[in-house]
Image (cartoon, rainbow, N blue to C red; front, top):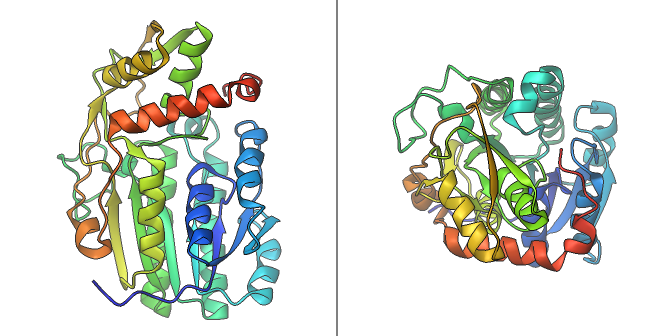
Length: 330
């Protein structure tokens, strides 16, 4: 492993987001000054984002700005005010299915936003960039997915916009020597998750005794990754010089959706009422990360088992049920 980079001040975009807030929390715990930005959009109820921010605000080394990375003029003053040692770009429009409804916002946030950050890094001499990417790029490839696989046939605007962001990051590495680590995340879940994601929705539906929607027969598999593990890998990435590398972060073991539902039922002590719907064309049947590169370069591997992760997620939902029941599912 390379000698760690000294990170005194780091810009974390999407700091009120699911992965962003946990990553910021871990950086703060290491004594790093974190400047967080988020546009607090209403893709899902902003009260979930406000909850995450409430856990970060007590830290003296945390500064937050309501800024949209699509807006270069809003971002520029931050690069003038702070001397960033690194940038972690976790601000993104996520969600495969919604990208079919409004592809334009995915292009603006994921591609233009990433370009804005890279250009400001170039102008201000910031050398380390970590970009959140996605396992969705591996559609149609042989499992377990290796980072060297060609990912030139994205099957959703979301995946295409992430591929565009990766390509732009390489361009700035090539032209300007920015040290880039691209992290391809695999199905992240955990406490304070996104209300549009399957684990959150399944817990909510089962808790409320409502009929839940499952697209397909439930035999599709996901390499579920607990948010603490993903944040830990992201923190490792910003401290590790790589020149330009693409690295998978995943659990290294796929589980059927039906198994995930069974674990949730077991933890909640309730049975699911399931309505099966046709499998969605933009979904993948299975994901599975080869994580050897993460181990070799970042010294990282997932620590939280799927069973433990589901238990901790279900516990969080029970503890926060009073206010979560007021959050509508997207």
